[in-house]
Structure formats: C-alpha cells, structure tokens
Image (cartoon, rainbow, N blue to C red; front, side):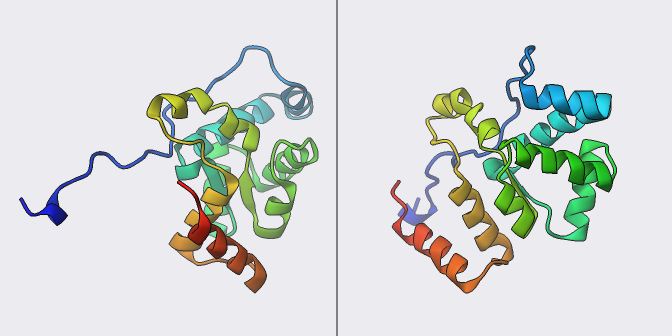
Amino acid sequence: MIEEQKKSGRPPKYDAEYFPHYCNHNRTLEIIVHKYGNEGYGFYYRLQELLGKTPHHGYDASSTMKYEYLQSKTGVDHEKVDEIIALLCEFGELDGDLWRKKKVIWWYAFVKSLKELYKKRKNQLPEKDDFMLVLLNEEGFRGTKEEEEEFRGTEIHKVK
C-alpha cells in the first residue's frame, strides 16, 4: 500500500452521545422552570442535547432555517427561545455577546461538563475559538474584517 493511502486511525471526535444530567438543579434552571414550567425545563435540556451532538458543541442560529431548527429541537416558539436564551445570557451561562452579535450559542459550562468524556477520548475539550474556526471554514465568516483576521490568526498559530 502506498504511504499516502494508509489510514491514520480514527479522526478525533468532537460530539457527544451523552452529557451529565444532574438531579440537583442550579439556580439558573430553577428560575427558568419557575418562569416557563416544563417548557423551560425541556428547552434547557434539549438545547444541551442539540449542543452535545453538534461538532465542537456550539450552535449557529444566524439563518432563518437554523433558527427554526433550534425551535423545533427545543420544542418552544421563537418568543420563548429568545426569552430563555436572554436569561441564559444574563446569568452568564451562554456567551451573551456572541448571541447578540451573531446569533451563535456557546455554553462553556456545558462543554466543561463533558470533561470526562474528552479525557477518555484523549482529546482536548473544544473551546469557543475551535467552534468559531469550524464556522469560518465551513460557512464563511460573518464577522468584521478584524474578527476574521483574529480567527484566521488563531488557526495558523494554534498549538496542538
């Protein structure tokens, strides 16, 4: 077999089949459940399910179709999506600037909860910059020229 044709093992995996679902709720979830009942509870965990199966665990809801998919996956209408995400941003769960500027969801605490999964895989935990580079490479960057240069610079200088 020619050297170039040899496969080098499995590529690193950056999605999850499971995530921790704790029995003791944090304050954020308690407030969401108080305000939105089971719809809020469902939204919270269904959003985590969506992020879990999305490579690098972020979600780009900037297009109409992707936003509608977010609604369908979380089971709530657009008003509640906006309200609950605003709460999650206010509580510091989601990256508020990223959501407000680009309609992109990044939930660091959720990604951090997958630490053991990535430890077993011997992969590093995905970071926000990793996810943003995926968006840059797959769909073209929707940011300013300075932001694009910043992320392209990150890609070039990234240490493995």
